[in-house]
Image (cartoon, rainbow, N blue to C red; front, side, top):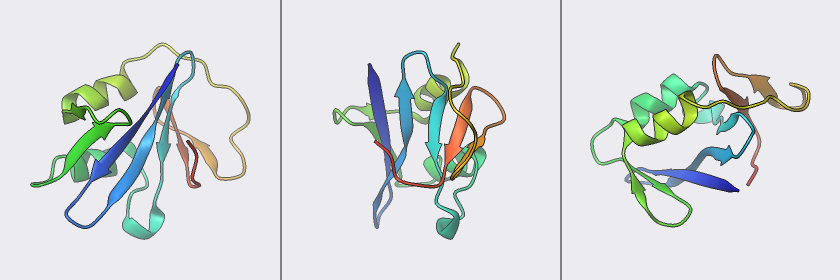
Length: 99
């Protein structure tokens, strides 16, 4: 089972990442927007007028989504290559679109 999360600003909706059972959380990077780390995303999500929702349309608080990312027992699978890098905790970064 997996769930995608999206962040909506005044101008756009961005794919934040994906939670998959048994895997680390995958955080999507957008270097051109300055979104390179989980901490960049946390700052954006905490901004006025920004919302977070899962793929089912359920609004999620910043605390809830960060809990999903940071407090998980998961396994890293695959190599950190081709746009995928290891995160600082129970998450990895991807600089390409995935779903």
